[in-house]
Image (cartoon, rainbow over the protein chains, first blue to last red):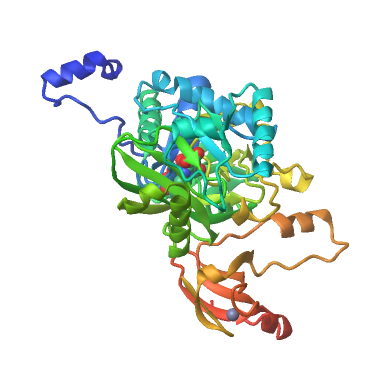
Length: 419
Length: 94
Ligand SMILES: Cc1cc2nc3c(=O)[nH]c(=O)nc-3n(C[C@H](O)[C@H](O)[C@H](O)COP(=O)(O)OP(=O)(O)OC[C@H]3O[C@@H](n4cnc5c(N)ncnc54)[C@H](O)[C@@H]3O)c2cc1C
Ligand SMILES: [Zn+2]
């Protein structure tokens, strides 16, 4: 296994051999009778959890069971944005921990994930929004996170083609996080899968968890479409389907599943060099290294497990795009898709034990869980291995709703489709 | 997606506002805290038939109870919430 490390030498070797010597990046494992830990859900978070369990916490008998194939869930459907520009104390240290892990990820897992810190710029259009962004920027800097307020001239120098003087939504400036940016999402799934596999983790695809076997209030294994798999501990990491898997243990969650759409255009010459968000409507955009414009907007807003959205949101996103960047009006759309998200009652995630013994829950990432992938994996691994929360994720408790300790960045209340 | 409003006929979903699970029942004012936590925060969130509240803000202003399959967006029934409240919770569809 040792010598299939990726490096300049392996690239050269394969160039000379006509690319015939590459091996599969991970084994297609068959289930063993039992493991120390079974993770249900092979998305970014599940794979990262398995990797950190093996790498940092020395748990070696780990399996990830995935009902489809690696990369078919939200990890392969998101718009690839990473940032740590949060406001509330429960969130900022967690997302900053994630940002630091992104910064060292490729060396750590020996995989090119195309981490690109090209900057995330949130535009504002009036005084109230400017004040809110000043407050957010200050909160970030107090936590040691980079944040920079740009006036309209600075924004104009960077993105001269925006619609600055629109009568309704003139652009007044923006809050820039330079360390934010994009990461190639599939490569994150593949890279963690390969790195976990090299540490002996079994990645079992086409294996759906259909039930949890209990004994005396504790979970002792997972019923799957490929038979029963015994487990010392079970971690649920099923973004979008968390309510369904938790129901197997008789739990009801503070979550609704909603659908979010995303879009990519035909390839164009590079002209957008950062991530830009519109402050007067729901629209955000970046340009991929292949040249496609990657953009999105709001969730559709009603409970859905359909993995496809409806026209009104497509129209709304396009209107937002035209209001901000009229020059994209004649660009052709290449693809459009949707993914399912756990929308929680306060818009923040859950990484916690459950009332069932040996059963742990990682859920509720709303539309922002991609950037969280490394820290979520690390904190969930910590929780499962040590049976206590990681310090930076200590606020993400399942009982916070009953304690009145919600983490509601937008101040929307218990209305999942507004977060 | 279109909703067939009993007052206005079939209308695009953009005319409506969504308010979630229609089967929740508000606890008595003096109910225990856990009952309130359940009501405010916990949801069944089914994959399948879901009875849910929609408000026809760009139409007749009625609150509607829609029975919809969350896996396919198929709609089995749309009724006025006020009728359901008056005539009890008859099962309209699923
Ligand atoms: C269109 C879109 C755009 C987004 N953009 C961004 C963004 O720009 N930045 C950002 O930070 N976040 C973004 N997100 C959110 C982010 O993608 C998710 O929060 C995150 O990927 C969820 O974690 P995951 O990778 O583990 O999920 P997933 O990849 O969905 O993993 C969950 C896995 O669980 C599996 N599963 C479910 N049930 C079972 C079962 N019973 N048995 C076995 N396996 C099961 C699923 O098949 C799936 O593979 C976006 C999401 C969408 C849909
Ligand atoms: Zn109507």
